[in-house]
Length: 177
Image 1 (cartoon, rainbow, N blue to C red):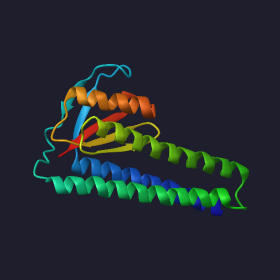
Image 2 (tube, rainbow, N blue to C red):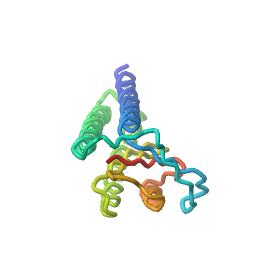
Image 3 (cartoon, rainbow, N blue to C red):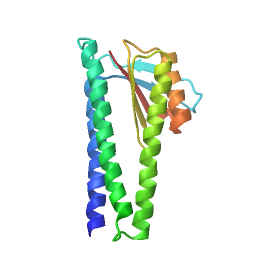
């Protein structure tokens, strides 16, 4: 009974995190949609969503946004790691539940490491900041920039494809000034 409640809490927490990431992404970023990707090396058409004009945001709010999201993401991961550790360490947890919790824990750590690696590589390309949110099937990348060119979007997508093994068609790249 206790394991079921903990699993429910974990699932609800993850759903809340995904919804928050989507809201923040829609609220603060300019979305660049890339279509027609056949494979990792495919070329796509870049469409900039001109309806979302956030040019009135200053650099401080952008920097604050990146920091706030990063802190929120890390806080959520800390809670998830603690919950999974409790399940793993509990004497009342079945072996199957412990194995599932261990797998989830390792996925969480891998995802966190991949996000940090991708963010570092993107920053090394000359962007002031980058924020990456990975899920099992998709990725959301926000970079601090005034604009993004098609070759920069391709570069970012290739990094995510290579490091996180996510299909290019499942990667959203956006920018925030």
